[in-house]
Length: 456
Ligand code: 4AD
Ligand code: MG
Image (cartoon, rainbow, N blue to C red):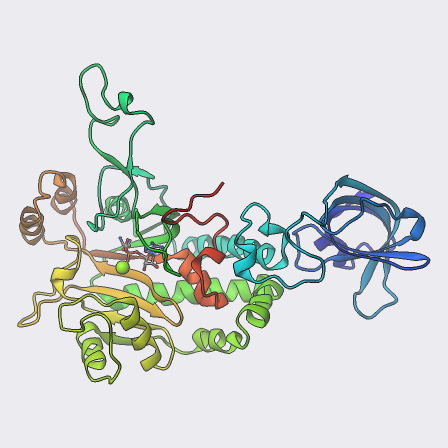
């Protein structure tokens, strides 16, 4: 018999042939003469119905057990599925004690419950769907940038820079104190303090000096002391840097296009998996996604955002004076206020932004050419800016921050064939939350890391 994945088996193309499938039992229904099974192997949300004579039943054939089954693929007499497998042989490859197994047959487990079992939750439909969606979204993002002529850069995970300057760095040294001092008395393994990257932006800016557009897509790390539903200590970020651009509109267009083309790919390539989320996790959410695919995202300035917050009757926990950073509560309010729909906020106070942000040189308000994309349910999904390309202004700013020595190489980028450029980062998990309507970021990453939790 030919070995097929369940996805291939249910595609109907091999009806009438002898096949073999391997997978995990999702249901067992023994009847008088026949035994009915559903087997899933992660290749599809759907399981394959297996019909066997009762003689093939086995005490180890339980919910969750791993099986290998051969038989004939036939058209199913029932309307519930198009094909089924008439089993000749069933082997239990790995048994599963249903009493100890944390997931129970026919029971709907919530995302919060299954989150307690990071090593087992991929055996549930919801998490299996999530993993297929993540994988497809990753492919879609790569495809988007490839089509637009961007070059993918593998930016380092270990770095000596603190791109965001927010002090949320994980420092990296060899394990064991004694190793932190070598024979020459160097304190650090790399001679300088090294960190897990918070952003690949500065490395992308290097490459933006030689390519029309570059991007990177990898893990980033922040020592956020937060237990929030939108923060992780390790998350994936898509970052792009575009050369020869002088407008935030260019950046916003790429963010919006990236969102739409990735989402379109998901709706097209894994409709059932996405539908599971839109039906069971966040009922009715599909309409929101459809609207996001059609209607242009809203755009307001930071100053307009502050005016909206200050004219609202809602009491906020954090200050909303001009110059204060927008907090999650503000971001969520603004998104709601603007039709519960994605919203770009542009031109933030210069003082709030890291050294690289381009000075708008406006008076009396002093702003930077920076933009955030806020989305329903999540708040900030993307952050980006034009970069300061004027050598004198950049020098002054770095000097004021006491960073001029460390960033000599960064100043060089402005000395040798510098071009106006800009870029942004999109939090991949926040993107998934936004498209699937998932409330907690821990439910859209295989192995969540956050303060006081680094399981597995
Ligand atoms: O706004 P951030 O800090 O921007 C940067 O790091 C820029 N250097 C990116 C660039 O211009 N190349 O982070 C970008 C995005 C945020 O908008 C958010 O979606 C996500 O990364 N993000 C997080 N996601 C999960 N957990 C966290 N702790 C996150 N911190 C940021
Ligand atoms: Mg940000």
